[in-house]
Figure 1 (cartoon, one colour):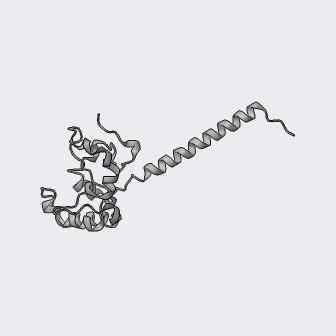
Figure 2 (tube, one colour; figure 1 turned 120 degrees about the vertical axis):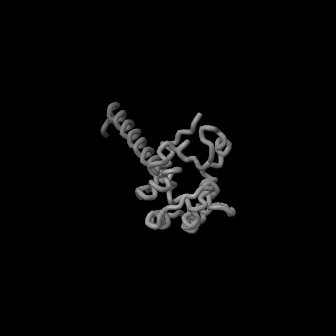
Figure 3 (cartoon, one colour; figure 1 turned 180 degrees about the vertical axis):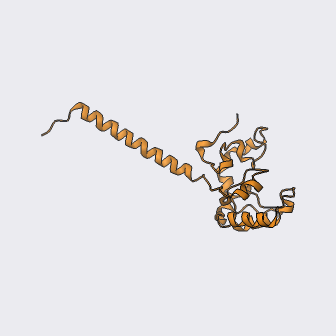
Length: 164
């Protein structure tokens, strides 16, 4: 019978620990990746991102995006109208990437759909609603206040920085 030398045991423990660390890192990155979105459409980023974060299309359903885009003249109290070419480009970007209606359909309201009232948003942010009145955050719609890479489409927890 072959004897196990202490340094072999040490090597086995180190390699096992390193392997476990790499697996945990991969799992964390896979989870964080769930909150990274494509914002590659330059027209969408320029037009919508000029006033607020160009929200990921996945955060609203297709019917909601269509409602938003057909009421740009009354966009949350502002005229956000764009020319026909820009509107077509934006619609072609957001509607095919829209989220699942069950998760992303906002609560029924008389005005334009709000991401902040969707089941997904409420589930993700339910514990932090008291923070919306913080002067550094101001509202639930101010993603960039906490999500430092929101403008790049990254809402992962690794880039989350809640103001203190």
